[in-house]
Length: 592
Image (cartoon, rainbow, N blue to C red; front, side):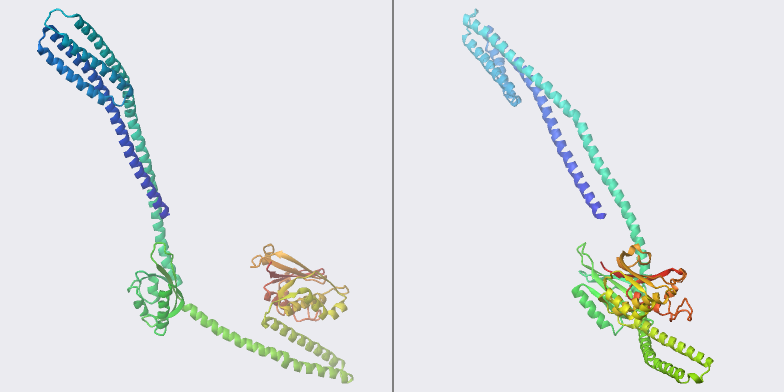
């Protein structure tokens, strides 16, 4: 905004200056034209006056001429000669007054010729004059010719006066028109100038108001910035490269335990607060900053006067050279809490590593040391049932059957726990895999149960996906096994497996996902189903909807399914109706 405003003001100033120059030029031209018109009018009056004077001088010449002819007194020649000289001067003035008018110039030539002839007539009549009282015939002829010449001169002057009168009227009209336009012309230029000045004034007023508002916003922003630095434990500083001077924000002083602006912002003064073990490394980083004009994230410690040690982190980057001066803007952050949290995380990671090692040891114990005595218990119970069957009472045999059932459930529980543990701790190596192949492997593993239940499995063609192969195969095994287990008595199970690609935003459960598309794989059966209120609980570890005597199982299978789907950044849901069947819906992400 300041740039556009200053550009506008410069433009207004240039336009105003141009208008003033135009006004001066037009004024000079207009006054010149008025002066020229006035001069022409004055010349018109002067020309008329000279023409009238010529007639008067010619009359004086005639009077002198007649006086001499009548008296033969040479005194009458004086006014004649003076009139001759005056007429000559009058003609010279006329030359200067009508030089610009072609028609008048021609008439002046005729007038000069007639005047010249008239004076020639005077000269010849003087030569014929004598002392006789009676005029000669030639002299009378010359006098008569002189009268004719004089009439021609009067006619010439009359024509010139008429022409000059017309020119005078025309020049007066032009002069009056120019004089009439002059006020309007100057008033118009004045209005234009005032409009430009008013526009400039309004623009300046608007810019001043905007500048005032900006200053208020800057003051508020500065206060907020200072407050945010205090709240976030951050500070800023600027290095003016050309002058090699620094400027510290108030909170940088607080980060080193001092009051704002309590010391001069120099590197030497700041180094006094840096921990002695970190000052060499920080100095090297700052020297590199001065050479390369950039400071990467640098960690160091500072020591307050009370002995408190704080961890700081600094970073800087070159600012845009909008004004020609090179500046580097830097940020210094109090990273003490970050360092302490990192130490806590390290400690917890170490504890997790110890816990994982203990879990690994437990897995080994569960897979070897616990199962070995359990196998012996089952073996000895089998021998006892076979060899001592006749010596054991009916109640003893019932107890043996319950012990066998309990040991079988314990064995199944250990195996499921191992399976769940492997799902959590196994390496997650994703490979591009044909899902149809994994489904076939799962069906092969469950072939006995499928044939026993006379189950029918209908499946769409599944895509090739990036998955953890053995986990997806286990997912298929658990879901098919679940449908077989909870099938209706006397009704052959029908399991339908369908696949489709969906937009993530169209599905409520995955609309917030980072992936645009998902694979939707659905396992639908015609089993006993369950109430929809239990749709989330069935995926919890050890959760069972039916008693041990009704259906076998440990309540871990579906929990394993959920863990496998989560490992693949997917979602699994269940929908069911009692005595109608259940559907398990899986959404696995992919990039299209």
